[in-house]
Image (cartoon, rainbow over all chains, first blue to last red; front, top):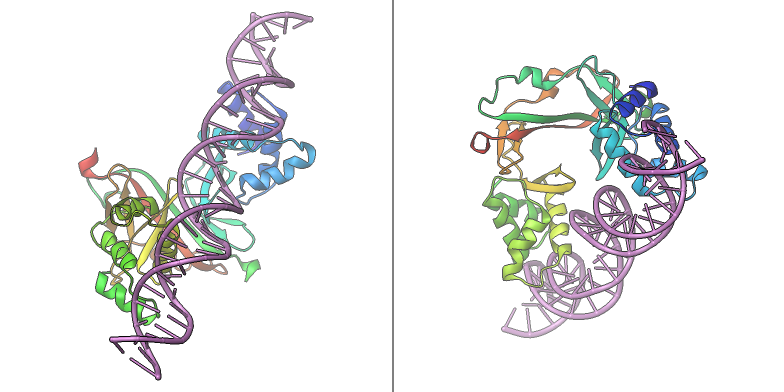
Length: 136
Length: 136
DNA sequence: TTTGTAAATCGTAATCATTCTTAATTAGAA
DNA sequence: TTCTAATTAAGAATGATTACGATTTACAAA
């Protein structure tokens, strides 16, 4: 996902182009890591001291709904990152020290196609946590 | 995990046998579902109106540390259930309607043994969400 | 059985992330 | 430029979780 594509989606869905959204998208485009609402506020309040959490949370939520961002829960906080290009579904290794992620080109659901007949699968989560090569 | 085994662990680690702990363990032994701190309070305050959240959270945390309970994050709240008997590592299908769980006798890490050399794996999460046969 | 003491609990306040509310501002269409 | 719905600011409210001082309790040792 890049910024242009994000704006296409937003425009298509009738959302307006605001400088707050622009800045939020810029922040995400500059990192691979999962970051929190607070991380974003900390960056944005330098330029916009009166920045509101509401604006951040509302936009994060919008972006997740539109598939621009992906969301995960790390140690009790929501973390977000730019949605990967969706050429193939995959999962992530997440470094607990530096926050960097590595793509795992494998989905366990492939193996489980018909393992639980009668169960309607709506979602799944598969994440691996640890330390990346530079962090141990 | 059954209650006797839980008490063995607690006693071994020097924890005392209290009626609050007993009641918490009883609640868990009577359900397969993941339940929240509030669920527990709601049951316990019938008998102990002055029940403190502190007591519940402290004990839940202790029980998780000792491997008596397992913990997961569902819709922003911590949920707990009795730790499965550890004869084999496995994962869960979790029904989002009724909360019942189904064991998935498969761990994706088996397949990924050497897929990411250099990465130190400390933990992983694999959960499947949806509706069980009785709920759709 | 009584007593000493660390552990556990109570009651409540504090904290943290997140959501809500209302009024003011702004982007983009007409 | 004007209009209108979308967006934002500011701060209060909420809900889960943790922290803390005072009190009570389990249990081991006398």
